[in-house]
Length: 250
Figure 1: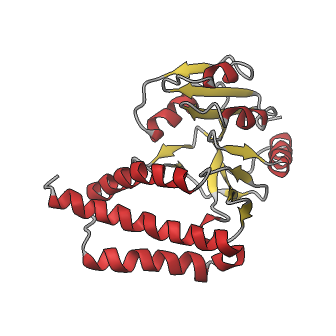
Figure 2 (figure 1 turned 45 degrees about the vertical axis):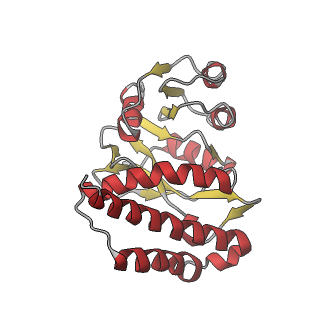
Figure 3 (figure 1 turned 90 degrees about the horizontal axis):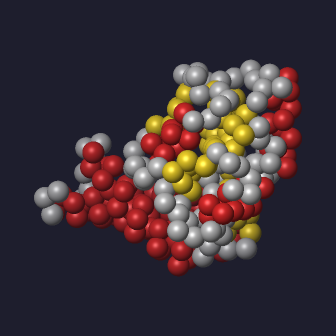
């Protein structure tokens, strides 16, 4: 049986972390990296693990790699605080660990719960995430946002879902839009991207059409339409803020 360490990074996640940790009860070890929580997050974490590390925030990639580096096992399963392991995924990972992993990492479909239903189409599903991997052959990489695991070989694919309890409501989405659009704009700037009238007009419209029509977001009804609009709004603000950075001479 290949032992697996589960890793999480947290900051003031008292409303999420209990269910996330409960869904990891199968793991041989749980490693939590906290960046200064002031709510009940740490008290809840102590009910599930004694391996809680304190580290000032240095970015998603650094925090997640720190958790991986401090795990005792080479095989890592990474979960975010607003995610849960489905029973199907738990069973699938257990079977893999018992017979031996054939790949150096595995991508897992992630399904989001939003506006009272699971979003099964559009840009939000299957939203494959590489979360199960051998740390000898992979690590977290990326910019300020959209970090992901990179391995030195082609991954396998699992069928069981990660449950994603993303935005609590539209107000929660708008609050996070301000943060993530700023980070994304800086990343775009570092990559040499430019923003102008064409990108502000075309890119959001293209994002909506892709999610709602090409990826059949319309099959999720009103929530699917809302998700497609949210994606378009997100793209607009990323490029608008990129244009603003240039305009301000940053």
